[in-house]
Amino acid sequence: MTISQLAKTIPPSPTLKLNETARILKELGEPVIHLGIGEPKSKTPIDAIISASAKLTTADIKYTPSDGIPSLKKAIIRYTEENYGKVVGPENVIVSNGAKQSLSVLLQTIISPQEEVIILSPHWVSYPEMVKICYGFPVIVTPEDGRFHPRMEDIDRAVTSYTRAIIVNSPNNPSGVMFSRDFIGEIVEYCEKKDIYLIMDDIYHKLIFDGKSIISCYDFTKKQTEKSKLVVINGVSKLFAMTGFRIGWAIAEKKIVEAMTNIQSATTACPSVLLQAAATGALGGLQSGIESLRLTLENNRNVMITELRTIDGVTVTKPDGTFYCFPDFRAYNKSSTELSEFLLEKVRVVAVPGVEFGMEGYLRLSFGGTVKEICDGIERIKWALDPNSPNEIYIGDRKLIRDWI
Ligand SMILES: Cc1ncc(COP(=O)(O)O)c(C=O)c1O
Image (cartoon, rainbow, N blue to C red; front, side, top):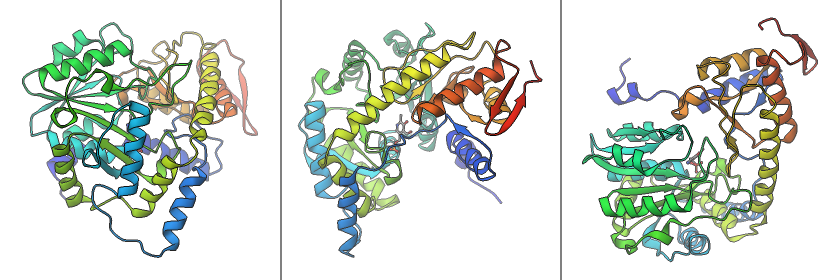
């Protein structure tokens, strides 16, 4: 069998691989605690179900326009106006199979071979691979002060004549850190001055804590939509806990949306009409589910941070949003892959290695599950690593004795 040069450079998704291992272990009856999950546990909003069911019962399930059905576009336009204070037209909106497809189609639209895309570390695992699929070059920028907040001076040093785009994801997967209003203002201004695409991945933008308010990048742009290289990515996956529906979108200038639509049409035709109907229902329906999810996550965040801070030698930055935190475990193991494998093997806790997000020695832990999962998961991690914890632990009905430290 031969596979393409490109295929050889794309590894399996580390998070999906871990999910699969956890699923198999669970099926075998193992008491796995999944702190690697990338989705909230809440149920699909009822308005999404009603809307998709109504469409299904018409028995008229056909192709849609490649860039999305008009009613969903209308709902996205309203969402953008209400949450970003920005008025756009249907020609500025493209609906895709998840924010992931919007991002990858966007990169395929704007990146030519060898062109560079700046990715701010720590970063979502998929960005570098998406850039590589376009034969582009991912340039990872790590803040030199060791914090999780990007700095303009580090970005400016990395920008070259080949730089075509910068991806900003705030609040951030994996750190949960929300970038400051000043930074968002500066990066918008910087990209406009340098004529670089600025891709705002806002998929977690309303899942923020401590009374923080959403930051709209449009507050800082001086350009009209049709002359702007600012692109906003969003979707229903995280806010509405609708990851399985695979509906996301991009807001961009008309010419970019047209070119993206051509690529999307040539590859996947259109997102499913049923799932678009569900997303229309979610966006147009009761929004209180977002607030209750946000409140649950804020409480979960507090529990997770309190528990983590009881482990000697582990430091953690308090997340401002999302459902992830990114503690530093270098005091126990410099290799996050080794540590992740160790925790799964010894105490059946799933944690994603930080190296996959561009930072070695950290683990990404999700607080999207229940308080019990968080407390039990951290207790197991502490037991496995910290010699000051008791020598025995019960995992399910199994008694474990620590014989490695
Ligand atoms: C930062 C970031 N962007 C985009 C996505 C993809 O979202 P979707 O499910 O809409 O494809 C994810 C999913 O984990 C994410 O973490």
